[in-house]
Amino acid sequence: MEAPKGTHPMIKWLEENTPKLILAPSFIAVLVFVYGFIGWTAWVSLTRSRLLPKYEIEGLIQYERLFVSPRWDTAFGNLFVFGILFIAIAMILGLVLAILLDQNIRTEGAIRTIYLYPMALSMIVTGTAWKWILNPGLGLEATVRGWGFENFRFDWLVNPDMAIYTIVLAAIWQSSGFVMALFLAGLRSVDGEIIKAAQVDGIPTWRVYTAIIIPSMAPIFLSAFIVLSHLAIKSFDLVIALTGGGPGYATDLPATYMYAMAFSRGDIGQAASSAMVMMMVVFAIVVPYLYSELRSKDG
Amino acid sequence: MADLSSTSVPAESQAGKIALRWLLYLLLGVFVLFYLMPLFVMITTSLKSLDEIRTGDLISLPREVTFDAWRTAWSGACTGIQCEGVRPFFWNSVLIAIPAVAISTLVGALNGYVVAQWRFRGANIFFSLMLFGCFIPFQVVLLPMARVLGIMGIAGTIPGLIFVHVIYGLGFTTLFFRNYYVSIPSELTKAAKVDGAGFFRIFWSIFLPLSLPIIVVTVIWQFTQIWNDFLFGVSFSQAGTQPVTVALNNIVNSTTGVKEYNVDMAAAIIAALPTLFVYVVAGKYFVRGLTAGSVKG
Image (tube, helix red, strand yellow):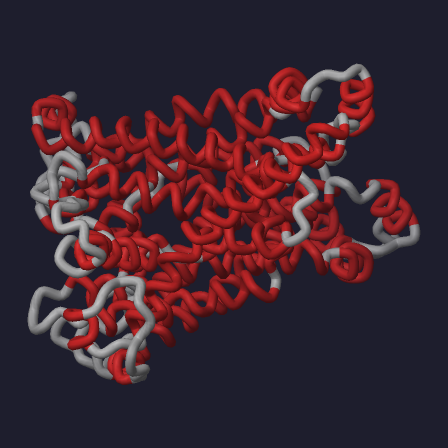
């Protein structure tokens, strides 16, 4: 923009640089509070910090401690059990529900609303509800026993070997409707002409799905996978509300391990190193995705 | 998409088609029950007395409806040593969410406007850096943030929590507005510039009037995120400034006294009501935010 003659150079400079000045505070905030903080955590993860941070670098001692800790071992193993089951089942369920809902269902709007509402709830609310339902003494187990099935057992919540699956169950309940919404949008964007042509050729419906529709939704599978894996790695609230990491630390995840080290054990070095491992897992999944997204947009 | 079930079917399989249709509705119905069951159990449990909970079963309707549990949950249940129910914490969440949503939405709108319409060298790098910031697990910033809030003198305060939510909400709000504004032809901005309109004038009289849908999506997204947040709330609050999610967790997991399941359920519903309300009245925008947050571009 041409400033009129006689405008003070300072004002001219301001006008020319307004866009940059607007971005500057956010830019600085991101640099400091995201990248600077990651740097700080990375640094502290290399020290002997306990209750208070120390800044003398000691090498990988915290990571060595982390990898020999049985509690971390459980937490990291749980991340994979939970993550794989949660992502796989939520995706399959989401896809199946989307396909079922895509058959000209008269009450589709209402059903969709019901499938998706858990996504609006806090994980703490979800955890509270399922904790009550799964309560062995008064919940589902007692109810089914009351119906006459005296030997019915459903004590996953207090069984160290099974408790992690209650987290999977509640997480699927919370998020599968969202996956359904993603896939439903994908189904609706498939070119109807191709499908009609296939039907005219007498190709059976299930083949139309497996050969045409589902392969064309590859990008949606990818986004759903990214979002769900992101949810899985960050899962913290649900574990706290549903099992508190217990029985013992049978349902610890890296997120709850990190929190325990940081805020109740006073072991900042362990907290920092576990947070760094979490970040590396996230980045191993997300960075290739974002990289390809940003590239395809520029191209 | 085409209705696949109504393809040309021979007449003799008409009965099979109807059976299939029934099966379809049956399956959909089973899942309706699956998704509704926890909500149903929460509501009925919250309306029962403790005696009835101990003797009855999970899915029966209350024999005698009582709102005592709701009263206790709202203003009498104990969160640790404090016994004021979730009411003060509910208001904390309101006091945190409103300014945090307003500020992060406004800044995100301006950022998105710059990145989409005032391209300059570095703007894309800024956007990429911001996008990566959306994906970090927040555990990686908890420790330094606790220290910085202490240095700023806002540790354990509501302004401190507002600050944290604004900072880590900016990535998504910028993303939403950027993706929306990028579809507005840049000729519009160019023409306005030729006519002598400045940066803010163009934003105010051209972009803002077009922005209502994306503002609604962003506000709903941010509100849901901030209201439902637990990690920041539990890490950066202290007795008296906790948000409602933290108070709910404290009530449910408090180990002292008799376990009042009906109060737990009433408190959980109270904590869920604002976001459920938003979902029911503006579900379309809620879904759009969810999908916009995952499917970029």
